[in-house]
Image 1 (cartoon, one colour):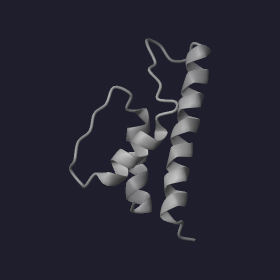
Image 2: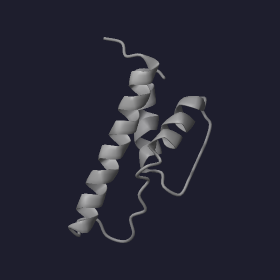
Image 3: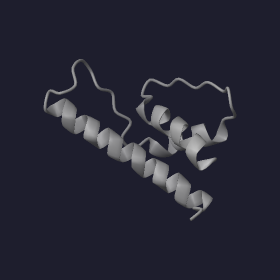
Image 4: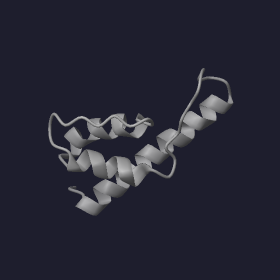
Length: 79
């Protein structure tokens, strides 16, 4: 089943949010060392940036977890 553009966008935002929440949980348990700078609430910015960029474009914000995940998903969904 091919998802609509909106459904793909929502899926990627939800994936990013779930990852960030799990990372927070693991950090609070002490399973992630150092500092953890989360992007909870910034999912739309990351998804929109990745979808809007072309192959070879580079964007490196401070909180890049969601970008890393979504850039891999972009190739799967063909956004």
